[in-house]
Length: 427
Image (cartoon, rainbow, N blue to C red):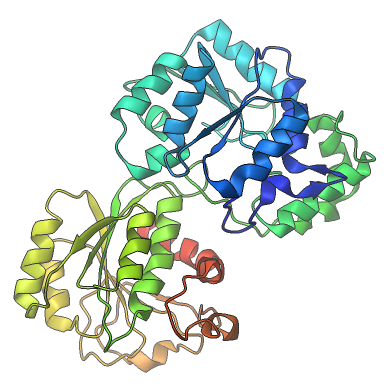
């Protein structure tokens, strides 16, 4: 129920039935499955899911919201599973034939893990993973990164030297199709597909392809939507480190815009560190809730000492990039970062420095102009986000009084943040 881009999506209506019901019914049609179990969270907000499962007659296991790997492992353990098939509940076009194909390949080859997502050839939304209980248990015991725990299987498929992997591919390449549901556009697409079959769910994925061949305009409903999460798109393993502060004098805007970048990086599989002097209770609670690694500085330091403390804290992190957001991080500070061998991005919407040592300078303001920076140390890569800012009227209306973190922050930034992170990984 806690989806950021489409809250409550598994209970959304698709042709008179919930998305969850559509998924359960289609999965139940697979011939090689012994039991179907819904693993949801123990939050009260997910009580409607439990009620829906009761109506559908499907068992429910409730566990931790963030540690999804723990939830899967304990659900499998409670049901004495020898192998586990993972299907996500936002795939209402999941095909029982494909599930059986992947399971059959798994049973025949006897790998530790089999999936049709290792090399994407099927439409996104038909994702099927199968793993041995022993592999799931090993991942549960050994993985200690947050994205391993959130996305369940990365520890397995990112360690082919430790696990035997089997990739199942379609006869053609259909990976450009998007049939999963993360947004309203995705939901409209799926509703349109079901409508073409009188809202019955006995159709196959081949039937859907035939509909799209006849009506290619349907694919335009969600073609522009980017896939989130560690399962596809850009995948990262390294840590992104933010050195950012907040105070009554400077406000909290620097931390909040870094939070949007941090969430996008985490969704793509990376870890996040925050090094900060921020002492705002609600801000700190939010950072901890996101399970970001937090290194609080007890006081402000002069530039050289600040950097030495920060560098000491980061000495054990496999850091990809350091992000500086704050007007007090001047050219001298940037030079020290670069001399230490870090890749550096600076978020700077004021263009006040006489010299930049950063690899990337990012200005998030809607009216940002590259010309504002003149010819001061031309950078190998410059990123600009004109007409894309989180500070619109809807957001500003919630700034008064206590701090309110709004999901809209990530929604506003999500698309251009992904573009920046793609550039970071390829630059």
